[in-house]
Amino acid sequence: MPEQENKPVHVPAPDYPGLPVELDVTTVVPRGLRIGAALAWRFLVVIAALYVIVWLVGYMSVVVIPLSIALLLAALMAPGVASLVKVGVPRGLAAGIVLIGGLGLLGGLLTFVVVQFTSGLPALQQQLTESLDQIENWLVNGPMHLRQTQIQDFINQSIEFLKKNQATITDSALTTATTVGEVLTGFVLTLFILIFFLAGGERIWTFLTGGVPRQVRTRVDVAGRRGFASLVSYVRATAAVAVVDAVGIGIGLWILGVPLVIPLSTLVFLSAFVPIIGAVLAGAVAVLVALVTNGIVTALIVLGVVVLVMQLESHILQPLLLGRAVKLHPLAVVLAITAGLVAAGIAGALLAVPLLAVLNSGIKSLLHERDPDPADVDVLHDQSAEPNTTIPDDDGEPEKK
Image 1: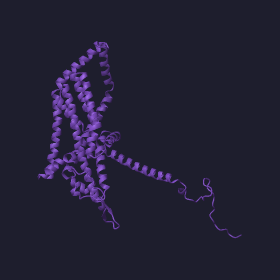
Image 2: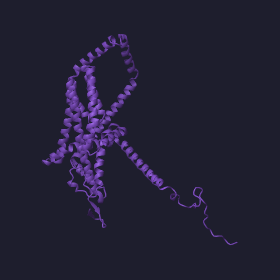
Image 3: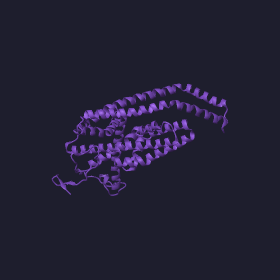
Image 4: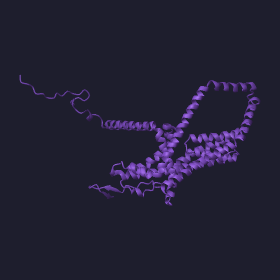
């Protein structure tokens, strides 16, 4: 018998009668589904990459956090260094003067707060004793009508509880000591990095941009400079918010006759640079002092003043001042702070808005075809990106629109 030719056998597909099996299945998948699937797997890849980046940042937090804080401090001190350089002071010497001056100012403020609290401590102790006597008298003779033996039993039970949980308290103390050691290490590392940022930040940035491809190096250079300019605006706005917090709470304490107004206001100013937790702790100290010295009614009024100032900061000052300074919408500022707090705690809340500001200015600059000379970008003020006024012609050369 003659050998039959090998011809493809067409078997009807079960779902598509009359279509050959070897037909590419993508041709029968709806176009919308193909587009959705393509977007979905790309989205998953981007999310996975971001997750790896966040994990790496968290893993290297011992280095990343001091580096980020040093960059923020450099943005705060850079205008002072630039002013000294303009009058002829060498950059290294100018950086040393500003750094020593900044540390001296910070140390002076902290010393002033500690000295004022220490000098007022005897009066506070006397007020605390009187307040405790008043509380005990209210518990015995007030509406609760407790017996003296019940109060003493409660005190004895508290002491017994502390004795039974001495190991847990000791472990917590050791953990706190370890945390303090880590904080001190981070402070030294931050200070070390800050010295080099102030003295040779320009050279460091030039070295980093040297690894960028030559054809986009200028654009990346300009984008980085504009991002740093937005960082300078951010720290200025944060300082303004801290001043408003300190003045608002200080005026409230002064009107109510609470002692230690100036050190408490200074403490509020310093703590305002730590989002949320710093303000809460400073406000708690102010309420506690008011409770000990002026009674529960004044303490409740101080609590209302602190809550009012914090609401003013969270919903008006930070969104408006920070949003205007870093050219971000107020909603973006609020969402960035919230997301940073959820993702990385206090450090995330502290770094979320400056990171968003830098990315916003840098990306806007990268998206434009024409950039000025990097030497013409004022890193202390210039955040604007020039509009895209050129398009490439057929030869690849820029052509006016």
